[in-house]
Image (cartoon, rainbow, N blue to C red; front, side, top):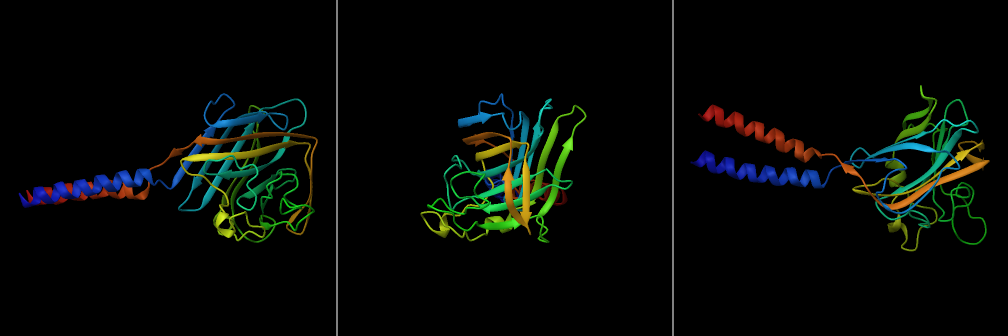
Amino acid sequence: MKNRMMTTTMLALLAAATTTGAAKASLYQWDWTPASTDGSNLGYNSYGGDINFIHGEFDSSAQTLKWVVNYKNESHLDPEGFTLALNNGPNPKGHSGELALIYFDATRSSPVITAYGYNGQNSTSTYYDGAERNGVQTPDMIMSSRSAGGFVNDMIDRRESDNSITLGFEISTAEINSHAPMHPGPGGLADWFGTGFDDHLGIWMHSFRGLDTNYSGDFLTQWSFKKEGWLDGSDFTTTPEPGTIALLGIGGWALIRRRNARAA
């Protein structure tokens, strides 16, 4: 009887732990195509590249962000880069002093990633103007793949067998998310979010054709283009993966079964 009571108690605790693990998943995934009806306040323009699909992953435990965009093959200018701001629900546009803006430049033999504190105005000025105040403010430079930081796990610039183009990356976001912004938002340093998402996602991504870039040292001095498109919106739904607590629940159940078998 005592063993049964212990088993019942353990099962209840493990069930609660498993539920908690699912509710607090560390890995979230997001998949989008132009046919999607998820999210709100959606704005999409294919002028900078006609998107087939986007796949995003954010792991809040490992602090990694994966972002992959596949563009249709077209007879004119290929997409050569994009800018990206993400958060956990609201539309990122206008959130100065809160978010990182990532520039992905595929104009070179090896792509370049740079990240800045988003100025709340637009993606094409953040790299040289750090704030939304009047005048040109010092840009808030966070990181660059041109330096020896080693935050890049993978970069993709690939033409597929169907002639579509895939651009993307996987990076560690720890430095971005722990960054102290040079130009804080209205609430001060506490406003800083960085980048990533959880069970909801807000996105502000611009794609570019005919991109022309230059750098001084590690960071941009030029980001000019012939055509620009965008995808932005709020409250997109992501797919959470089970957390480690849920896996511990499965392991704990196996342990209980083994103990009961020995007791029998």
